[in-house]
Length: 487
Image 1 (cartoon, rainbow, N blue to C red):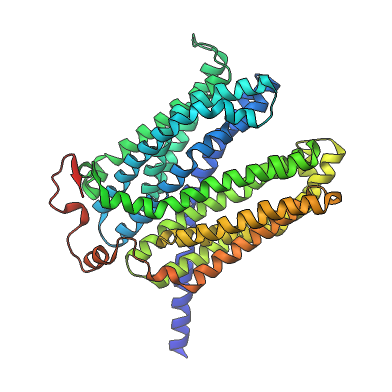
Image 2 (image 1 turned 135 degrees about the horizontal axis):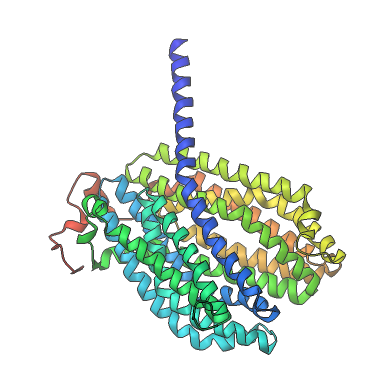
């Protein structure tokens, strides 16, 4: 009996410790995500003071920016996977080397995005907005595209710091950038303190400068004495084709998924809902989406932390710990989003009234909130499962599942529901969106439970064996401590 009691106590202690570790790791990543969301909110609020045209322009303009940057940003998530697994394998210098490949690739993706500026007038023209609004959209995007490179580099370094379990550093840089963004907006949008009054272009330039500040802070952390001593970051400033190829192999499916997510939800709202059912349904859908950010952004922060935790556990060869971490993080995500679902259901009418007093919009929004309440827990399930799989480097097939379901159920099913069941209004497409989120969550969870991720070796058989056996570090293959070109 004593042995059974001791085993039970050990089991409970182990699980309690894992839960506390998940919560401690998640807090800064959640705050980081919330802080990023706040930067967008501040831009929107300050630009709104310029008038209706500027207010109408900034959200579509930001969406265009994210569409152009999405593939690169998604690819940078692989830095988290590689850094955390290197940390688990006891190879911190290799973690820094993968981070630097992310920096180089980030600059490359940033340069690739710049020609997109020439396509901006055509892109904004496809939105069908008034000429005055389109002019503001073009002005914002032209300036904001200058942030492409610093944004990619900042994201790669943030993923590195999360991967090596130092997420507070990324959070500090983001908060500092937000504070700078507010000041820059005040100076450049409205022309205070002798600065030119640039209007919406000032908001874009303020974001560019804030991103440069964030990038500078992260680079300062990366090259700090502590990181030079522990991770040999000063020795990793070079191109390694094999490591860069690994980042692309693991990260590109995520990048493709990032781009597809933005594009598909844009099509869903602007085309499936907006063009089929008009302004009231579009307004109601936009209101629901504003609240959905409050539910899924913290869950995404938990997911980013989970990716780093499972990556480290897998790097150590501790599969059971990775599973335990995933179960606890999934429970936290589902509990939080489930609570949001309860609020959405019972407070659906007041929530819509906060943004709109039109009885038609309120009625539509209340119906949509019922559906949003239904899919919350499944969204939490999918976010946790996806990030656990990313921690193992299992990205291709999960992204493929999501792509197939996106175009078959969300877009294809949404259009079919809208055409075949027009009397239901936007509720029909939103029913298909609910089915889509439920199916994605279940598919990703089944993928995790089947355990294919346990057999994955993102470094390749040879390097994986060498690392686990205590062989020489990849980053130390005779490379000098200066700028190097490695195969």
